[in-house]
Length: 375
Ligand SMILES: *Cc1c(COP(=O)(O)O)cnc(C)c1O
Image (cartoon, rainbow, N blue to C red; front, side, top):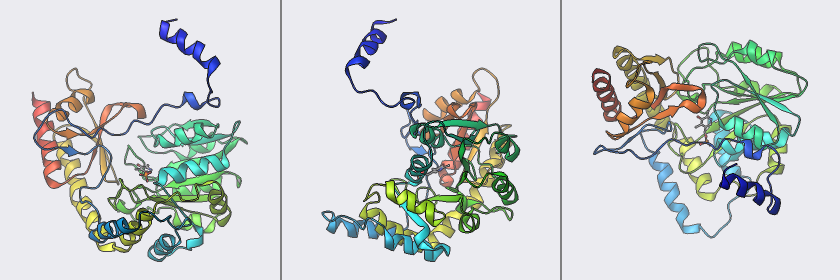
């Protein structure tokens, strides 16, 4: 025992101790926001949009500065109404949260406890692991095939203890997706008492005929919830706003345990303006439609392998060669102002995730990687 371990052991007898499991949680590691060099910073580490936010959304935000002393509407009803109108959903079955991360945590707290299991996929979003453990339940990881969720592997792991299945579709950090036939097959194979959580944080970006975000399944089933976020395509990550849509009984349970004012007034006002600005969203999709394939092709032309992505980011795999690995590329890019994301904690030690940026950012990263590989 080192002296600091001995100190810690002694200390736990004289201080509050978290519930079992809390200290087993690996803290979430956010993407870096600073480079170590370079004149211009290109932050491509957190799948933020390069297009900023809608002008109407920004105007709504500054209007709210006049009423900061007032509590917001605790049920965010005007925002739920606006989302319901734009997406064609019953607003009574929508819940808003401080980011979709809050919705994911509320789901875990409401439905999971000690002795329960919840399944997520091998390279799935790590917030699921945190939410499951924080609720006292046990995460069960289903292996993937070719970095894609595997319905059979998920269903094989269902036991009478399985209360929840988390599926990011498309998934972060891989960018892969399940066609909706497969999502339906997954749902059909789950017990009625298991809640299927479909996280469609990147749903707006997907251009595939066989993709659906899960809205209809959530509208017509008693055990499916879909979550969405304002952080990605709407360019509002800093505001913290997300929502979930599901059966009335699930929304009712979440409303009972959430904070009474979990969404701020600025977030409500900005969310209303943003969701109504469909022209802004279309422009963001159009930008991605140009630059996602461009970045993919350019990186492949450099000899790198890129996992086919339907989101606003790509997963890039590096050579198993000293000096050319993902950590080396990451360091090289950071020194030149480009911040990407190492994903070793996702079981992908030799890959970098790159968000699709501005034309300048995309070209700069490709140029630097070309030089890096040739050096
Ligand atoms: C970014 C992301 C979210 C959104 O998180 P917020 O809390 O809404 O910012 C949710 N799920 C996945 C898979 C993501 O990548």
